[in-house]
Length: 260
Length: 260
Image (cartoon, rainbow over all chains, first blue to last red; front, top):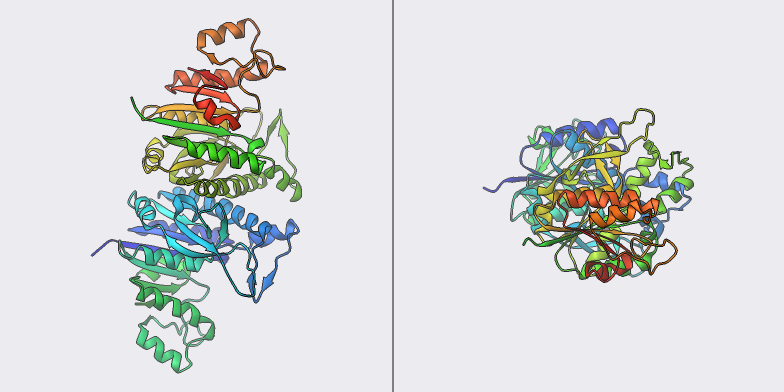
């Protein structure tokens, strides 16, 4: 059996809260085995855009990344957030390296093409450089990934962090026993959205399709879960959905929803 | 004889000019052998501080790095500038990885202590992690260094890029034949500050001390040259001072001032 690799996606609400982030990094650094942390944005990019009077254009609920917005997200994600997390991990006693998709060419993407909408400098992933990531991980160095990729022709691209986490997990599944963890505001996938005690502890595809057919899966969760099962189909060992604060419990399957 | 390693420091005026930077990266990528690029700031950090109404405090000509300023320089240097250079190098066909001193713990520093002045979050370098840099270079990957270090306890620190270049060159001198290149607005060290044709092509320590004693070295150059000779004394193979635009000529000692 190959070694475990944890790929953990954290999102904005934990990044924006210094104490919660610190507590999360404490748990992250306590995990044995190889690990990759993929972070999203947080409110700082939006706040900076406001302060710099750069209007944020939304099309169908998605932010359009114009040149000014790309500059801000590159600064905030790849600079401020990424480097503070790396420094924070050394304070917890573990080695870490922060990267964007450009560094070591680790995630190559292309500018999103859409028939009617120009999303601007948004990247869709072509390929993850498993060799590069593998080399770093084998130095017992955790990798911290900012959600910025490049197109190989000098253009940086804003890229969805969930997708980055998933593509990395898929690309490394032949080298490691991959465990992909999506941190989330709820305790896991709930049978009743209003009841945090209704977490579905385990789900395989059959059970998922049955629950979905019965209308028991909250609509907003369906794309996330479809993606999770697609990752499993592509070789990812396990997907866990739950709260970042419960990272160690999630990994021990004592909390959250485990999909395999 | 060990392999050559070029450590090249570029400063703000070239970073601020997209076309000049592109032409420089073209030359940089054409160099055979291992290479490290250390970049300074540029005007973007100052411009951002102005736009965000963060007053820049200067003490005796030195910028004080308060928490807000550290946030800006981390965003601009480690995010925007560093990642655009890395993406730009891939566009020229070479592999590159961008780092701060926190990544891979490659430059450990401490907050500057001064009897009377608090410079804020400014770092003085303790140690360069030669092992980490060596591993990356041996993958034939150029390293792009942003002038931000960390203290190992979670604190990022703003650090002088000239000093970073010098400390990296010293730390790697037992592994490579190191050539440290300081790019500069003038064509080299001039005998007559107003005459660009008066470049001193070569200088050893004896010649330097003689010229200095005769008052022929421009006062502003003395600290730079003292540092260059200190680097040579510490094992650096060669120091070259000249214009970034002439990088290939500098390396062929067809331009600039070569110190050895």
